[in-house]
Amino acid sequence: KNEVEQSPQNLTAQEGEFITINCSYSVGISALHWLQQHPGGGIVSLFMLSSGKKKHGRLIATINIQEKHSSLHITASHPRDSAVYICAAPMIKAAGNKLTFGGGTRVLVKP
Amino acid sequence: GAGVSQSPSNKVTEKGKDVELRCDPISGHTALYWYRQSLGQGLEFLIYFQGNSAPDKSGLPSDRFSAERTGGSVSTLTIQRTQQEDSAVYLCASSFQQGDGETQYFGPGTRLLVL
Image (cartoon, rainbow over all chains, first blue to last red; front, top):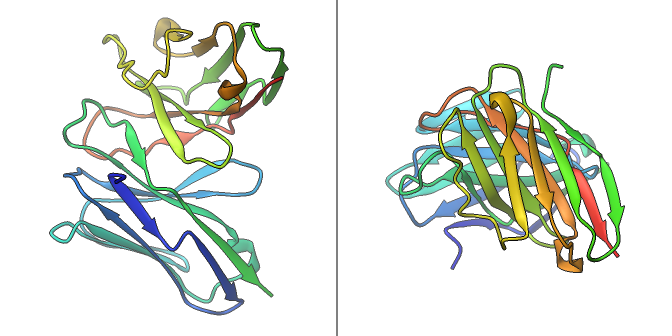
């Protein structure tokens, strides 16, 4: 079992729909990252959060440390949101902040 | 530059040859990470540098892989006697300091294909 798991693996939505991606982890973490990877392969860091909720534009990330769960929400989705979304966490037991990654969620937003 | 840069962006090599991949982190970032993303698989950690400390090499898949970081800045990942299973996108990331949950900034990656 992976230490960081995401669901769903794939998600297709119509433009304008609300999208939720879930991430759960099985060990203690210091913070959780949400990353976006576009078809070209480049990775952009969207959020890093250790508690509560963060919002940036149409993106909202929440985390519940007690339940070891985080969600990434996309409101009013747009085709340009089509990408792979990856959650990742530096494990407390690990020295440094090397990340352990979820398997990614491939999101396709159709116009 | 404003972000993390990597070179080359693409590399095709023959099995058995050595390759060097370069990463230029964001200026002032003390932590540098190498990750790998194999085709159809997720990202995995390879090696981590923090300041002048000994690197954390726990993610390197074999002794054919090595990395160095000169002057606390530029890093080179070397793969000796490449194998087809080394084909992957190699990503470098840097962050400002070691601390709980600092943001890591990723480079564009080097896409390596071993024939």
